[in-house]
Image (tube, rainbow, N blue to C red; front, side, top):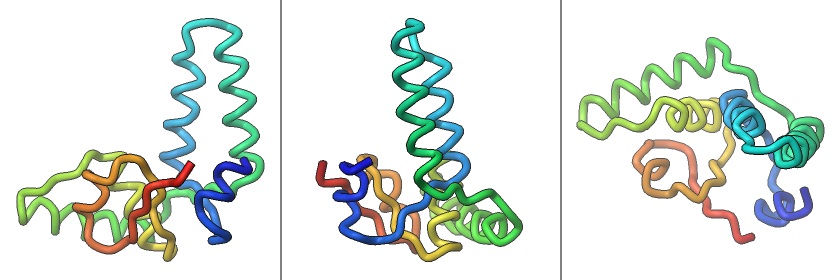
Length: 116
């Protein structure tokens, strides 16, 4: 968790509910019981320490607008990435990601690469 706190330089931290799901998928896809347990402990520690923002009507409205705008200009973004972007934009957060290429195509939220 200290790596995450350092990566955002004191800014508030939250996780989109779809991001929580992506992390949990990684737990269930582990190739051994040992790796699954290690991942589960790590993910659960994050989910206990960081607020999870649920998908709601406010985010749905932002998501619909972003989806339509990107489709109009022929720049679709993956479904999960678009939900993450809509969540960040609806709540005034930046997106912290290694995937700058896809997220920078979404108008609105600031996108940062972590400095781990």
